[in-house]
Length: 398
Image: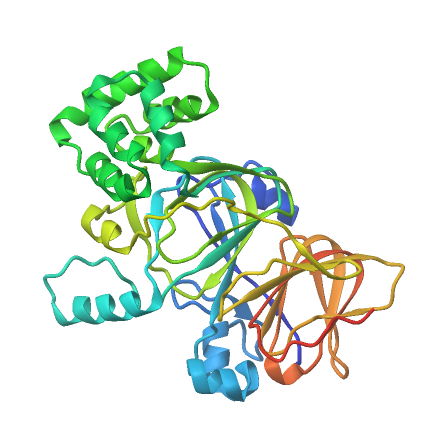
């Protein structure tokens, strides 16, 4: 078999949707529990599976048994038996945590130090970084990167909460005061947090402004969490389908609502600062954050060929393509070599190579093409996303 049908794993986090992934895959909705993420890849936390002679085979096992054939010699030399990327469909019905990810050097050093000390806080699950990109499938709301401090100062000032005056003053100092403002908020005295958030929510409800409506909503969900106010320091992004946001190392972000395709380096390292019942380590988060303004968080698509687009990001581990097929053109060659995952989001598409039987991909299903499959084509009527590693790329052909 040259191209494998790929079965992903759905993770049921509390913030997930009971309808989005089910509708994408054509299953009855609503579901019994929230379905937050569909994982497609070989991450050991939840590897996808492919058919085998004796039953399903985990993708990480398939790769470990033949790394040169599955990844290609160059990637096997660089990554061993690791598939460098992880693809997900994310379906958020409620806000995710306020979070950031370490860079590669920091992740490697911090993980080694953690493993050497059994009493150290367990912040890291692996030794790798996790740059990531999300492309919206539906209208998608997110917080992504720090906005201009003077804009944030005006938003906090509009709350008319006197005890926030030192934070506002720090923000009015510009980017030099951004770290101080964030640190003040995230280390706010615990015994004063309920009163502060109560005052913030009451004020936000009285003041008609989109920023403050967000504060009122988050403050109602998290009535003792100063991360509600840190959210007002970030860009509030409303993506339309096909638009993307890029989260490099140190970028503070939180997804709010919507469904999208995520592509990331294969790591599960997340440092949280709030808006979550999960473990928060403010000190470690402050060490990895980059206190710089992200002026334009939205990434437009770049056209490569008729029906083929990508989103250009400086990631070594992954590249993402979207291919739309209307049935009027010959099969399209997938513009990548190496290990490829093809995810269907609409219609019926056939993924194949020169000598094998094509794998059918429908909405919410996927296929895996290993490196030794060679060039792969997609045909049919529908829409797919292709995850790959940006090596030995060949231009798409009609």
